[in-house]
Image 1 (tube, rainbow, N blue to C red):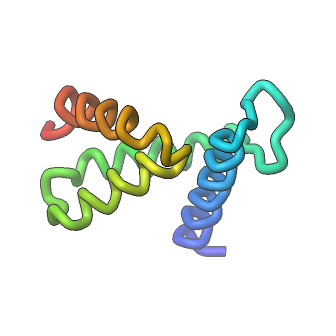
Image 2 (image 1 turned 135 degrees about the horizontal axis):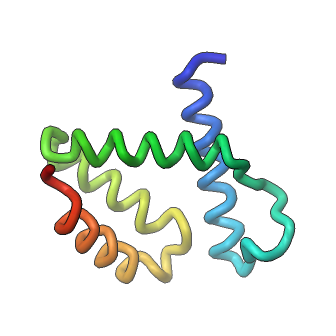
Image 3 (image 1 turned 30 degrees about the vertical axis):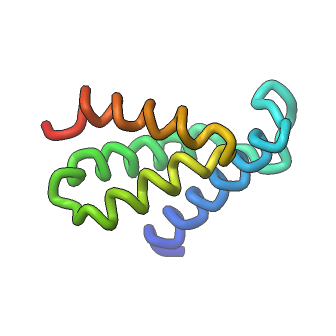
Length: 95
């Protein structure tokens, strides 16, 4: 498996877990799809890499990333999550 395949697999795990949580699941209960410590490290590194490149990304890519991130958990929370992302990027973005 390549690094790209590993990253895609980690993304799919995260997406499945977020969807599960959005449908009433909870991290406190055993999940059908669980993220282990290594998965979390991969996601943290990927997120940090995106943040480092944020200013260089085209607006269309930025918007697609924010949209995906804000609707990944549950679409009903999209507005709240978009605000949290905007605040985070304001605090940590262009560095």
